[in-house]
Each structure stands twice: as C-alpha cells, then as structure tokens.
Image (cartoon, rainbow, N blue to C red; front, side, top):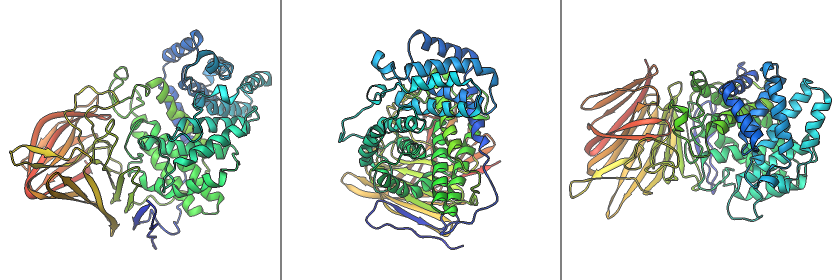
Length: 591
C-alpha cells in the first residue's frame, strides 16, 4: 500500500508516517459502528446515579437553584433516552427535572449571581427538547411551555462567561456559550446569532499552527473539547462571517486528532480534567463530526479513518463501563474519596458528562460511513511548542513524552507507555507531580515519570525533574518509531536519551554519564486491586487483569521503597541503574 509522508515546513506540524493508518487513500472495510452503542454509553452513565442520589439532586435544586451544569446534563440524558425508547419508568421524573431546567435557565444567573452552568447546559436541554418533540412522548402544550421558557433567555445575562473581546487569555467557556446560543437559534428559541459570531471570532485567536486550541497552560482536554464545541455550532447551522476561518482551523487539526489518540483509544495526557471517562466520550464525538464532515467534502477514505478512531475511543470506555460500581474517573477508589479529581470534577457533574458527549457522538454519527482497517500505526506526531509533546506509535504501542508539563498536574519525561487491548495504566498512562491539583492520598516526594538520573560528584543522585528536556529528533519507518531527547545538566555535558518503539515494546537507552539511572514507576494499587511485583536483579514484572508488564535492563533494578500517586492509583518507584550506557526494555503481553 502506498503511504503518505507529510511535512509542513514552517509550521509546528511534524509527522512521519509509514503504516495503513496514514494512507494516501485508505481502503475502508465492511465493518460498521452502530449508533446505538452511544445510547448504551448514555444509559450506563445515567445508570451510575442511583434513584436515591438522583432524588437528592432534585431536592437540592428544588430547595435552591441549579448551581452547575450536571443537573442540565442529567435531565437531558434521561429525556433523550426516553425519546429513544429507554428509561420509560423515569418519564414523570424527567418532566419535573425538565420543568426546573427550562424555568431556571433564563433567570438563574440574574437572580443567583453565581456560575450555574448555562454556558455548558443550554445546548443539552435544547437538544433534549428536539428529541422529545420528535418522539412525541409529551403533549404539545408541555413542549410548548418548555419552548416559551427557553425563548426568554437573553445571552448577555443567561451566560456566565462573557469575556472582553481581545482578552489575551483564552476562554473555552465562551465557546461553550456560543455553541449553546447557536443551538437555541437552530431550534427557533429566540437565539441571537450575533452573540455566537462575536465569540467564535474572538476565540479563533487561540488556535496554534496545528489548529489546536490553546486554553491556558494548554491542557489536552480543553483543546479537544473546545474544538468539539465549535463543531457543535457548525452542526447547528452556524454560518457567520467567521465560518471559513473556523473550518480552516478544524481542517488543520484533523490529522493531529488521529495521531494524538493512543493505541488504547485514550486522548493524550496532560493538564487538567484528564483521565476522566468523559475524555474519550468527547473524542469519539469529535471524530464522528470529522467523519461526517469529510464525507460531505467527498473524502470517504478520511471519513472512514475518523469513524475507526471514534470506535477506538468508544471501545476504550468498555474497560471502565463494564466494571461494577461505575466511577467517573479512571481508578477504582471509593467515590467519596474523590481520588484523582479536581475540586470541580466531582461525580454529579462529570459522570453524566460522559453521557452528554456520547449523545453528541450519536447526533453526529453517520452509519453509512464504513470503518477503515484497524491496523497498528507507525507514526510520530510532534505538537507545536505551545503543547510541547511528542507521541510515538508502532507495533500496537503508544509512547508519549512531555518536555515542559503543567506542574500542577504532570511531571516531565516519558509519561505514557500503552499497548492496544491492555489495561491502559498497567505500565503508565499519566505521570506524577509533587503537588497535584487533584486529590490523592499519598505525598509525592518529587515529580515523576520514566525519566533520567545521574550520580553527582558528592555521590548523591540527581534527576531530570525540571524543564531541561529537548526533543532533537523524532522519526518513524519500517514498523518502528523513535525519539531522541537531550537532557541538559548545569555545568555538565548533556545526557542523550534515545527511545525506540516497535511491536516488541519500547527500548530506551540513556548515555552521557558514568553512573546513570532511569526511574520506573510500577503499579501497585488501583483503589481496589493490589498488584505485587516480581523483582530480579535485572528485571521486574507485574500481572494485572490478565496482562503482564515487564521491565528488563542491562543494568540493575533498585527498589527505592517510595510510593507515588497519580490519578490512576499508587505506583512504587523502582530504578534501573548502570554505567556509561543504560538500556531498559518495556513490554506488555496478554497472559
């Protein structure tokens, strides 16, 4: 099969590809992705709310007001599922919740003066109204009453985020609000197109050379989910003066969207709101939008690749949604601990968000588009300097480096090694930081990832914890992907760190000092299951959920005895140590 080698000189886009995932004209298979799978995800998300929890949520809103968009989204998900022949027993509950939402949306911000989530929730309620009307499950006088309430909304008072035009800081909330207002316009609910245009135009200033949205500190979640809001506005008929410029940015970010997704189906790690289940929900929705968009442009081959990516994201959710006691974050700690969550990322808001993104994926999905072949990729993607990440794919593995992370959430170095089909965190999904802006129950002594160390003149060990990395080369071909990093050291020669990814796993080689170390975080506890490591002089291994991750070195394995925590759970810090040149091989295999 002919392959495309892509290079854009002068842009921050850097891709070298040699696999069926980057063909000039992909050949689609007969495989399909039924839209109803997205309804299944919605039902799982709603089902995570017990009747008691839902009743308490309703009582709190009745007593006060809607304080955030979780209530909008739970209401909308229930209503949409009823409209599709599911959850019929919740019809009366839904009507009461919908009454509350529609009555409060036009007045909540004015009366309460607090952030109530209209920016995020209005499009969900509008979408729900359209689905319920289509299904005809309520008399017209009921839906007309909801329409009358929603038509009273005035964007300049209904939405919380109304940033000053030209503000040097990006505001993803404004894009959510623009999408919500466009949904009102589409539905004939007295929407204001000028409001949508104002913030679409203003927020277009924050795309990088790859068409990625630069929310403050460049969190990966808020690149993808904000681009999704622009796509929602387009889906609901946005055709303002900035449409051509917007579509040009979305076209630039199309190929990066495919290349950033890991072989396990996960979005890239990095920054806030990462490692929640809704991450893959919005990625599937974004890919479904791209699939439909490319089909409309006459490019069925690219459309098929995006449908395959949507399925990969959807399949990744199965690992979590099939476990009893569904959590909204990727660990198995008790919900009451809020382990792995920022203060704003609590269950009531973020569990149902998975369902909301699944609905948008359902809305966008075109079942007539077949899926491209699901073959392992061989590719490298280097983001712009704004996002400072390099992602390798080869042989069914993905590796991700971040050379300048947001230290509120991540440490520098090699922060992800995943294999298709394996539990995503069995090696590492996301690194560690000393003082995370999310809840953990362990005090991390330092930042941590897979990263280099060296012995100093006084006999102590130093590690590359700081922003002293540079990717000097990244390439792929012949079933392998590789990256070379330089690690600067004050008043000392730089270390050279080479990593090669293939079907055998990743081999990483460190050179440039007499005594060298490479840190090896090893999973010990996911909140429910304790994992024991088998340790030898030159190897260690763990077995978890039917898979084994193995580390082998030409040096020696050292157990530091220190435990670290990230969003996924607890890891024990081992190190490989050697002289002059240190090699470590990491492989993941099914038992």
